Amino acid sequence: MKRVAVLVDGENLSADFAAEILRRIDGLGRVDVKRVYGNAASLPRWDQVNGFRLIHSGSGKNSADLLMAIDGMEFSCSHGFEVVVICSSDGDHSHLAARLVERGVCVVGMGEDKTPTRFRAACSDFELLQRSRPAAPAPKVEVSALDRRIKDVIEKNGSEGATLLLKDLNGLMRARYGTRISTYPEKNWRTYLGNRPQIFKVGPRGPDAVVRVKPGAFCQEDAPAEPPAARAGTT
Image: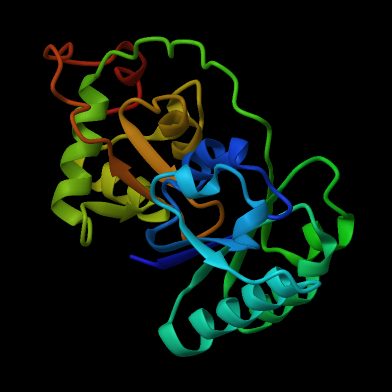
């Protein structure tokens, strides 16, 4: 599983975005580092957010940006981190993002709508942050026979942590069950799995995406023997 480092510009993003950041990094890999940078005296509430380590950068101009750049390069060069998440709406992080991408690191940028285009373009992927709002209850998704088959394939063929490369799922499902996702309304596995967030986790974007089963997802009533949409496309 890929190692992930999350670097937050605490002087640029408020702690209101903490929950959104945590939600979005879920599925990127094994998150070993979550740090918030800035002058501790001017970072209200970041020290109260569980899971993030507050790094005091002092009160000097651009001190937080410089320390983030140093740590980002160190994580890549010396510690083998393959994914670095840079959370900021500040375009000054463009150079760090571009240099990491040149080294083959997947850089995920996160920032508000005001984030400059140059920083967005320098990242491998950019996600727009919005302040947390009360979430509407997710519609209940019944576990189907197809879901159980996917779970079986993941558990028997997946790597550490019961994860399976998304690109391998299609061939394994066809070989074991004769399942053709093209016969389903969703037409592809990413869409099908993405429509069942209570059961599966998929991420990140791109060819290295993996799928895993959500803990406790199958502690439900037994599913029907055969999902209606699958009858025409499975054997």
